[in-house]
Image 1 (cartoon, rainbow, N blue to C red):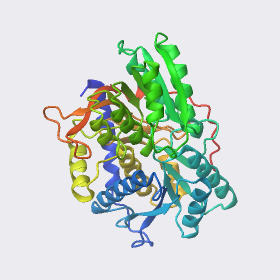
Image 2 (cartoon, helix red, strand yellow; image 1 turned 60 degrees about the horizontal axis):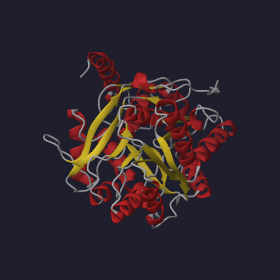
Image 3 (cartoon, rainbow, N blue to C red; image 1 turned 30 degrees about the horizontal axis):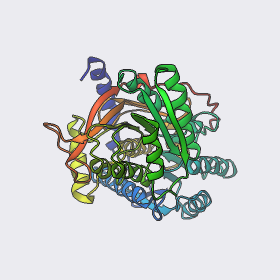
Image 4 (cartoon, rainbow, N blue to C red; image 1 turned 135 degrees about the vertical axis):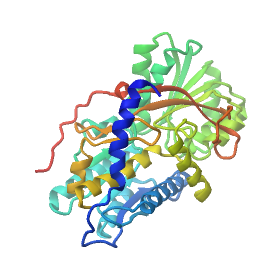
Length: 420
């Protein structure tokens, strides 16, 4: 571990230790603190939603096994199926609130995230004393921590700008990359990935020629072979894509069918079906992903967690940030001595914490964007000493680069209205 991180880890250990600090028992002891999980549990993205739900169930089981919160109360995740539909998302959030739940978590789909953030903010304005908080674990449009920031929204995933900065920094040392094809989902997130890729490649690798730039409908394409044919015809040696869920897996599957051998620089190649498709395409160490953690990072506590999750639910940890989110929530509730969102949100605001794969993270008070170390990883046959493959392929993630938290900072235009 670099010397600078040793000090940070020590700070983080101190912060992390407060997760399981046992405050005095409250009058509400016995009732679980419920968290509404609002994500797709049916339709083409159900696999992503279901795996995420299992991730969160295991995370809460770990916290509960160590005492829960507020002197023995358990945390409970309650699923609500938004069917990957914006209108249904708000219906489900309202249903959760009607059920008495005041903590919402969601991650899949920026448009839905914006809708939730705006709904929660307006709800809280109309209902003082009954505030609801939104914990965002994966919707990464920068607008949520800039023009549309809200005091009641907290994001644990790195935003699109941070991730694209990591990818393009990585590309500065990849002189073999000369022709890039951009393919993304046609909605706010995908458009953001596209625009940032064009901007940052021009700034950092102006010699890379963008030979294709295409958007496709979100979760509507069942056969990506026409898109792959275009990539092949363009002469691209690499692809940047923010595709996630079935759109990522089907894209790589079509590449396998066509025998396309290019590099993929991605945000979410590790989602359901992605690793299997990469193995089938025989793209050994040619698919890269940026993220806050990967299973084979040498950090023993994370390995123990990963083993436990796989043994119980048969899935890998999609969301190290989900662990950070829930452990910080538990710590904030305990520190506030209350599950009232207004009280524990004040603790999360600016909170420092030891992150899942080691090192320190900070929930930036300016915009509620979590600042944390990021990694670039490639997917290929397991290397000597690596324990974890993905989807029983015999292939796993290998770290290709690390970006310290301080180097992931991007400015914010957020003008946050704090409650009085």
